[in-house]
Image (tube, rainbow, N blue to C red; front, side, top):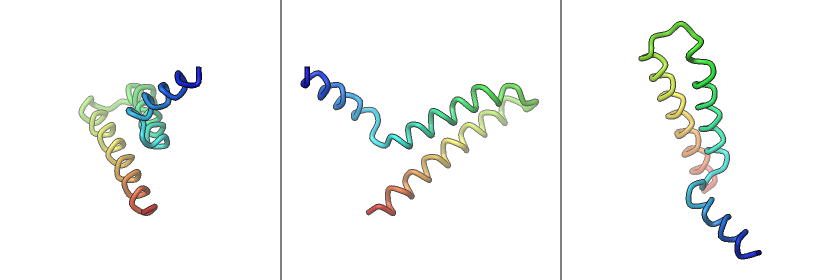
Length: 69
């Protein structure tokens, strides 16, 4: 059964390299899905906010990764 746990861990590592990055992206997507449709904005603004939030998460992740090296 240990090989199954190892295989599952390796499979997850293929898709998730940085856990905090993945959690931040999922949290931002949840916020956008739950909160943005309730606000009285046009769909273009919602899309722009989604993009800007994901871009900021990516920049922060890259900046944090480069500081470690």
